[in-house]
Length: 572
Image (cartoon, rainbow, N blue to C red; front, side, top):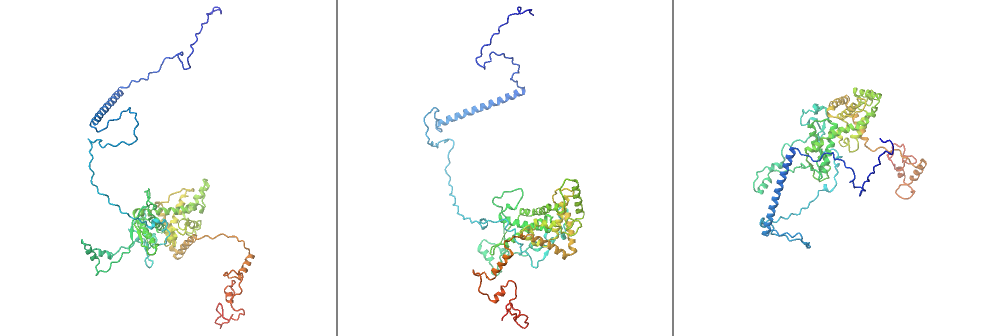
């Protein structure tokens, strides 16, 4: 330490830094030592061996490529010497090139490839000109719904209107229903005979016997054998020809078969057959077995062809189409479809009819549950008064829902296939009862829980309701038949035109009197306002008030001996 300022050493002068040439010049800065590790990495022994093998393989490929190039160069030189390939033009040739195409040299690879002479090939036969004539169905638009609204076929009905039992419709008499449920013959109404399969022919056609003659090589001998004058003339077969059911031109196979996959005529026949099949599901048995489904599909297809034949114009030859297993599958799928229609028609009306409320409140849920329990225990869904169980099958919900799936319009199932629904058959009524009970099960907890209407869960319930309906019919057959007929007529009347509402008028009662007076002296045949005179006979006929046209003095009135007393215009 220094005691005074005089003793302090002199300050050292700082040497100024040299002026930088630019801001990027860092030569005057202090550089720190590099403490980072080097980037050079020594490979492992395994990696070193792999790199060595890869390098050796690459070297071999390079040597092989060099040998191949040398070999190709040698071949090119040999070909140039032999004149096979012209010498390449020098790279430093700066002359303008011609735009004309070079002539192809026929001598290229002449030493390697030798062209063969042309083989004698016969000239192709000229293709004959064929005139394609389109059918009338392709030129005109054919709606798929053409056959859907046709009336039921009448030619298939046997004389006397006899009926057969449902056992004749099934291939096996002892066939069991699906899911192990037996559906007895008495559980289904008899069906008209026209829906039964046609009986088998007992003897061959006469034309077939004529064809069973010994054949020879001479066509004339065969013709003479067939045209035997001693044998009766062969009758012409009236059986219509079966045409193949073809797909439409733009058909693309989908996951499920549908009627729209086929040409318009076949599609129309399928829709017609599906309609009759749906009618059978509703009125005969809503849960048929597989054997019934196939049998009904075949019969519905035949009836659709018959209905189409009857709709043809006079003189047209009937043509029927073949049915395939795929078409039968399409028709059979309509069973679940029409059952779903019944459920969809009744479900929106169920809650309002039975005064059920949708709510999350505990009190409302308990009230709904008590009401549904009463309906299920007493099977009171279908009664007109479901509280005291009066009016069997007269619930208003049933008549309201029928207009949505069978009585919708004039082309509905119950109108076209009237013989199935008139009067409403017991299976149809039992199916409606079954659907109502199914909807009641959806509300069994007090809140609606939608469930699927399945055959497995509802077959026993249907048979129970069917037995109840039959007992009701047996109690008074005449009265119950009239009731079921009334149900049909009432639903069918709702299809007609609805009455118009009251319409206002600008003509008052006084003006109406003047109009009557104005038209009283006119006949409407001329433009004159009044006629000169009318005969007494014409006055009696045109009298609007209905007065008697007798003589004014009444001399003919009350005369019992007068022969003209009863005449409308007595002779004076």
